[in-house]
Length: 175
Image (cartoon, rainbow, N blue to C red; front, side):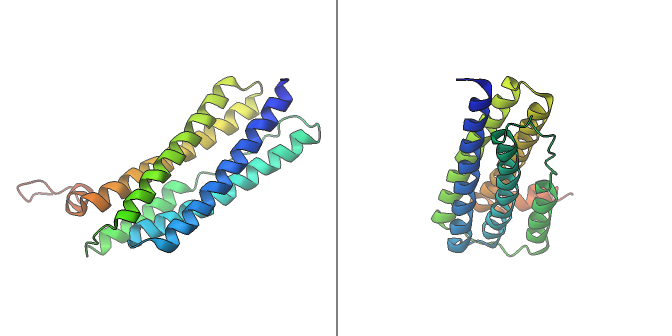
């Protein structure tokens, strides 16, 4: 398979992954019992739209016979996640995790890890610097999603421990 066709195939796969991820996050947000999980799923759904649009833009450019465009991914996840978790810290009312929330977080982690592998592997195989930079940026975004999902998983399974860690409280009560 020639390089251009391989690039298009990977972009098609990436668009589908992002679309499927968005649909999963919207459904998970709708069914979530926990505010923190619901808020994270909503943020992730919005970010998947951005990824899907940028990937689609590149796909159309390549499909039209153009060179790989120099498209930038503006990282927004860390700021969005910071808002979710700082809101949780302001409201220490602990929520019991529903099994469905933990299951959804586990599925989301697998999806994000798969996307991370695809993007980081493709960055290594890239022929054009713009392509390499694009896939590296996407991999970093996916890595941020993974970290937020793990943080949410910890919150849902050990809320008290999560609060102690986030508020830097030691066992002797010192902060």
